[in-house]
Image (cartoon, rainbow, N blue to C red; front, side):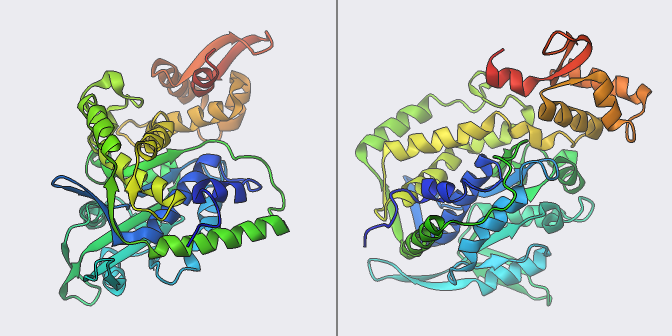
Length: 407
């Protein structure tokens, strides 16, 4: 059966074009939906390595800025309509998660006639901190999410009712949203860099796409939504092993041979907190390559164009990943530096007087000097003595805007 749209992801983003969420949030919501539909029914084997199309995606933005929750809400409309896609509660415990995985068992018949049972579950959480719990008591949940990311053949854990059970062929997908401060309340500084955080794609945005007072759907968009839903049903039915073309294998080997996870010179994100993530970047490329392919065709084939697109998609979000951790640290002013930096990023240019007028309730004048001085010395913002139109005075300029504009 042929597809109704040429590319599920780009058509989904077209459907979301008249909504407010940041474009990057729409994109990764789309990828998460495709992953949720594929489940553990497909995989890619490269020698002794096996890759599954599950991804852990966490949107990070200041409250109300980039409409991260809306992005997930709009995407959930598709997931809720597919009965085969099992989801976990927005707020849960490690034991309840085990129950949800067990209840997600699904018998599968493969194209060659063989059958197996898998437990594929997608976590959809509009408040990631509620799902994780507070950092003083969530270590077991962090470990569980870490273990399940790699899709073990068997996962043993306790249920809410006490007994230990075995989950056969678990598969876990995650789409969540949070703020820098909320993430800081859930993740201890010691957890950053390895374990769970090295398995998460942190997607950062500080602006909504555009203002849309009433995001109603046109008749044309309703037709597109129905076409997308029909194609998602096709993706749900896909099963089997993805195969790399010979050309793709050759080019992937060349790319991998030239990739050095320990070489800071090739990293787009130089924050040392992402050392562990860079060791997993090739794995993420393979996962996303399957999603790119599934968005376009029912054929279980990975071409180099799919891999190259996956690389580009990941590298698009890499340079802003470190913003997710701005409020996590041992310094007493970590959160305040993050707040001030975020405000300056939103304004792009802001006078010191205006900046103080916005933060004086939380940061007094003496503390402000320490906070802004730290932000400037850390290279997060620029201090200028003339405004954008030549106004004399102390001004602060967004470093992010300078990088984007090149001046």
